[in-house]
Image (cartoon, rainbow, N blue to C red; front, side, top):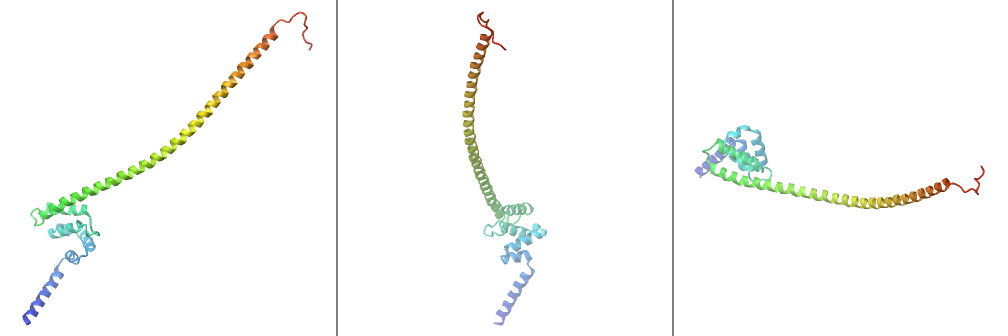
Length: 191
């Protein structure tokens, strides 16, 4: 009994010592405090040179179930750093698989973003097209009114031209009458 109690105490002390000696980053991960771990990783540049921390951070940022820390671009960058800085790492195979998966995620995200951009542009162009059609209809209505007005003005000008011709002809005839010699039996009117 005493041996079991002593063994239990030793195990308990070892686990406490392990927790106490674990890096804060590892402790935060083991406590599933994802946001705190991500913040600590970002603030401690020495972790970028630690194979285990680099892998753990890449997994942290590359896990979509951890929405608070999910950043596939950052995860991909960290996995690439792990692969280039630690080519003989025990994590190489897993990191390569995760990079391939993250590449697919990022391609899909880019495609989705492009689809959204195209949909927004189509919507914008459709709205512009509607406004332009309304302006065109209005301009055509105005154009029709201008054409009618121009036709009326042309008719008025032709009418005035006819009146002028008629008046000029009448004036000419009157002048011709006045210029003809008067017959002898008539007297010019007195002043």
